[in-house]
Image (cartoon, rainbow, N blue to C red; front, side, top):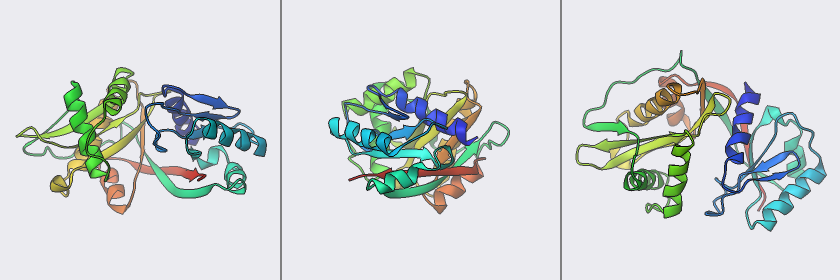
Length: 250
């Protein structure tokens, strides 16, 4: 399973607007943003990696004026962390990823006064992105590039879901990458502060996952940022499966 998850990460980064291949690595470059959470690299699973490959990877990031950074399933490149730390990289986080398949997905109770639907216009996409940015402590204003990125993801077969109140306010939302090899990553699950502790995060996650399973996806995966979100995801049918590493060079 680790290999399938890692292959989906490689595919996601390869679908960025300007991907760069450096030996065994793929860098998911996006010229519209310098964000390290978008412009990062990952290794192809099972490939041999040397210190020279790491040096070339750093050079490619520097040439693009981007921070050298990787995210990957650790079992798919067992010797890579040692090579990266020897080159000065610092571990940012170690996360357990969770999986959901159609047989484990659970549908939470319907929430009153909230509608879950796919954003179909740029203004709706902007509202979803603004709610996500606000929830994660970022700039609440959605840029045109952000909106275009979401529209492009939807057009490629990805999923986006927004939670809208009776008065038209976007309370939160999230999305999922276009499935590759029947695998898709669910990410960006966010709920604005006034709407938390009401079951909304679970409802959003379940709806995104349900929509994925009506397409070509057989496996949905995500990462939990803490114990609270871990419990949310387990309640809708996600189960711990493997380890991922976040590591970067300043």
